[in-house]
Length: 125
Image 1: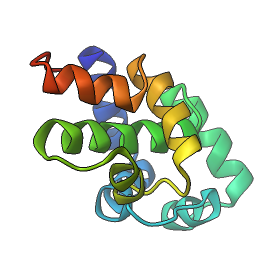
Image 2: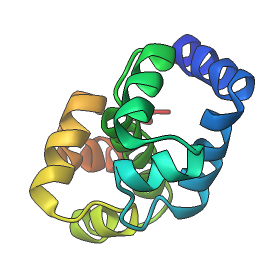
Image 3: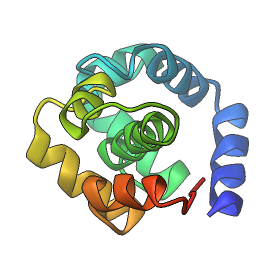
């Protein structure tokens, strides 16, 4: 998985428009971020930004944003004793169901299963 992250890091560095979007997301992921907002940060029209992002990264913007937020959730679950609901809202998900689906998609287990594994001493990066 880390190899994929390094590839994306290089893409974000190379394409300045994408670097601006990544920086914005890193600072504002807790807030509602729309495709239109990200496109505006990149200085592109929404439809073109969506296609550009997907072509350069291999994933759609929403999926990448969701993965970024899930990574932030993993950090919080590993580091603190937040409830699953608190974590979901802290990292920018608008509802618990969406968070649970995204978490399972990106991590391979539910947030509750992950939290239990952390409490049992099984650590993930």
